[in-house]
Length: 162
Ligand SMILES: O=c1ccn([C@H]2C[C@H](O)[C@@H](COP(=O)(O)O)O2)c(=O)[nH]1
Ligand SMILES: [Zn+2]
Image (cartoon, rainbow, N blue to C red; front, side, top):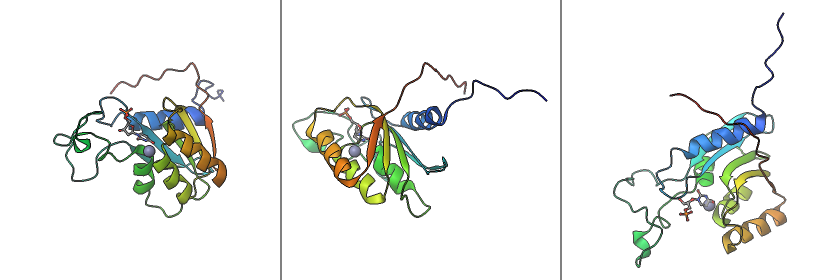
């Protein structure tokens, strides 16, 4: 009998990989965020990425970051990846689940994460860590007993020919 493969991807690589792949569906030209929610026994429960709500066309709604009129920016319309992943879940409770995400969750996502019962957040990037939104997320996670830690990046690069 032969030996098993040794270069298989770890659970963390798998779930962060799925989160990042999901983020590749985003139409946001500046920041693509992907999310993967996982049960305590390592089953993928849901995925999401930042995008517009159903019925709101990617081609007619704005993707700008700035504008004199807030209604002409993306911020008032976009559903964040974490919220999409939570709302996409069809299986009942997310109590005790883990959430892998490519960007540290904002305060609005943090509220949804806490209220859905998710207990652990693993994030790849935290480029807005000095903003009130992220500071508020950390404060709420600390109070609510949601643990968060950065993804420990590996040297692995995955190229999938499609
Ligand atoms: O918790 C979060 C925070 C942000 N996002 C999304 C929302 C926007 O589409 C981008 C951020 O765009 P910037 O141009 O970098 O301001 O990220 C999210 O999905 N989850
Ligand atoms: Zn958010």
